[in-house]
Amino acid sequence: MITQPELPYGGDLGPNSGWSGSDTSKARARVNDESGKTSRNQLLALRLASTGGESGVTVAEQTKAMEVPHHGTASGTLSTLHKSEKLCRLSDTRGGQKMYVLPEFVGGRDTEKQGRKK
Image (tube, rainbow, N blue to C red; front, side, top):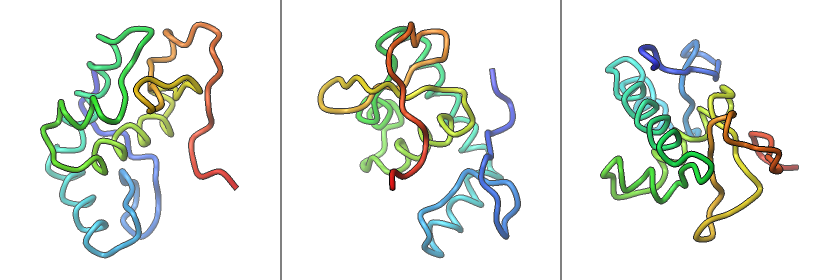
């Protein structure tokens, strides 16, 4: 169980959970990281991935569990855990979305590296 958030990004904020580039996104990341919201979202994602086993969790499932109207926060949470190597993103999809699983549930399936593709 995590008690401190995974903060794999750097920059002028120091370690952080990342933001999209806008000032409002940067401010939101700072508040969420400091308030414990980032930790709670990450813990929920890890629980969902654990419960999902080999099927893991998708962004849509994370969005629904977080009870947020937009997928951005859920996607960012999964991406941060992927970057921190707490989750693996499979090449497989479910419902048209990539599946994120705990490393022990990869089972030899193809995974994708974190980050933008060039």
